Length: 191
Image 1 (cartoon, rainbow, N blue to C red):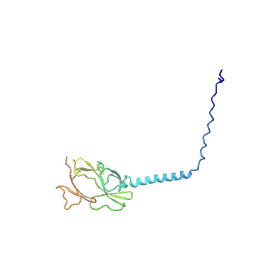
Image 2: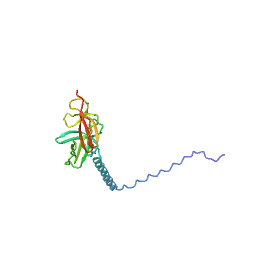
Image 3: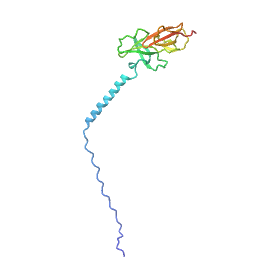
Image 4: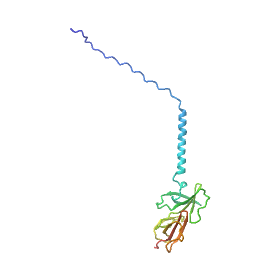
C-alpha cells in the first residue's frame, strides 16, 4: 500500500501586500507661484503693448496704406484702414507726421487727419480710368459710374512730377509732392 496521504492540500495564502509609500510631505512652493504669476502678467502686458504699437489700427498707419474716412465731429474723423483695392478705400496715406500740429505738404490737396498723437496726410486713392462722385456729405469721393453731372474721371495718372505736365487736352492736373504723382482729371459722360 501506498503511504501517500490523500488529504487535500490547501493552497498557501499570499502574504499581505505592503502599504503604498506615503506621499512626500507637501513643500511650500509659494515662491514658484509668485514667479509664474509675475511672468504671466509681464507676458500679457507685453502682448497688449506690442499689439497697440504694431497692430492694424489707424494709429499704426504707414505711407501707402489705404483708408476710409468719415466725419465724426468738427475737425475729427473716423478712420478705418482697408486694402487699397477695396471700393470703400477713399484715401491713401501719403505722409505720417509725428505730431498732430505738424502741417501736411502744401503742394497737393491733402486731407490732414489727426490720429492719437500723429498727423496723417491723406490723398485721394484714385485709379487711372476710374470715375468718382462726391459722397453724400461731400467730404470724400467714392468710386462710381462715369455718368452724371458731378463725376470726376481720372484720365491719366503720372508718377513723379515731370515738367511740363503731359495731361491730355481738356483735363486738369492735380499734383501731389509726397508721393510725387499727378492725376489728370476730366469729366464723366453726361446723361
